[in-house]
Length: 273
Ligand SMILES: C[S@@+](CC[C@H](N)C(=O)[O-])C[C@H]1O[C@@H](n2cnc3c(N)ncnc32)[C@H](O)[C@@H]1O
Image (tube, rainbow, N blue to C red):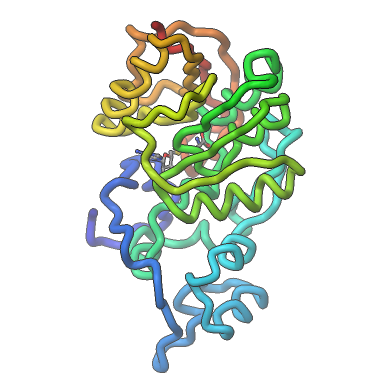
């Protein structure tokens, strides 16, 4: 983790994808310091809601409050049927540097964005509901819960959404509620486990070598055992193309600050058996 401050943390998330390097044990007990106004320290020029949130001394111990104060409920560009609590230029979270987020115990807020791979996969699932209708679906590396919500809306019997970031679990619950669907949100790393899901969906998981290797080593045998395994991906570095069959391709609107472009060609792939 670079020690220097960067002007916009969100940009560096997409550049380096350093999620796994972020310590995950500093979440608790961030309190206003006497010398430094809490609202200013945590939220920069954030508004009244954030200030009240701080004054209650619930800075990170109230993740739902944090999410509400730092996101807006917005339609997903490529899946506008779905609304999510998302960060954008109008939210204070957008302005945080990685170091500032680390100080308050937050890993990069992947859950506050609708990533290109997730958007494509959500679109594909909602346009092809037979893939999931009546089935048990796992959305791995769920982030905001976008793909899980798409599966629920498409008629899945049960949807489990899992992410290593426990903030994501809270965000998924809030986003599921905002879309009127039921999802079981969990915190954890599911690689190596098998709970008999019929379909496994993974949006934007190929941005780090270790993560991609672990995911594909786990997902390969699941696909080989007859499960449907779909990956949404905009051409990230470690996408294992040789093991994939392309099912669909979209032009997905993305955030320039994240991806250095406004539209990203993004595909949905099936992992071969
Ligand atoms: C680029 S985001 C994609 C989020 C969402 N699927 C989407 O497309 O919008 C990647 C997510 O993977 C999660 N993640 C990374 N390694 C993981 C693992 N081993 N198990 C579960 N989630 C993981 C991160 O916390 C992050 O939320």
